[in-house]
Image 1: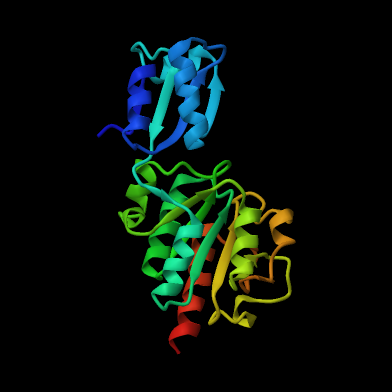
Image 2 (image 1 turned 135 degrees about the vertical axis):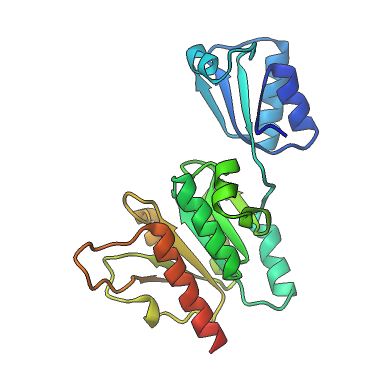
Length: 243
């Protein structure tokens, strides 16, 4: 199956048949009855939409796109509110991974692979500002994205609030704190937050955290790639929970 479709009616039919739309591009100023029908579905299913000039759509396809171009997600997305009860009911100690604006597809794929290997119960990403979950991400993950639930949520702050009220501690990776990941008790229900490649976890998310932790850095570079740092955090969780 192609990971992209275009045209008003084909996109409408894809949505109505249950296909997950990762992102929808719509020509600026588009109008009409079928367009209104599409917008109704976009609102109902809360599909991310971007309004673009017609030239951009023309570059994506030389065919008659009718002002609409959709990127299909190769995976199904879940809600953290449906995943968390399942984890508790299965008798597991929850372990979640929250990615705050991690935008590089290869980093996201590599992180997903590590997360699946470490038994993470779900990866949580925001609707906006995150890497596209496309075929490249799936390939980089070595197929892990077919095996681990991914929750795409409107507000990470609301997700964190829900998790905390459910007894899950929030640990944010932050290189400026004095605490290291070895100081954190990961034997309790935990969600680890990793930040963007450019500036780490946002200040508004840091303020919600139960604790902050960093990796000890002995060299001069000062930081690690987010996928590498993520692996270090997750394997410390495994170490604590299995020894």
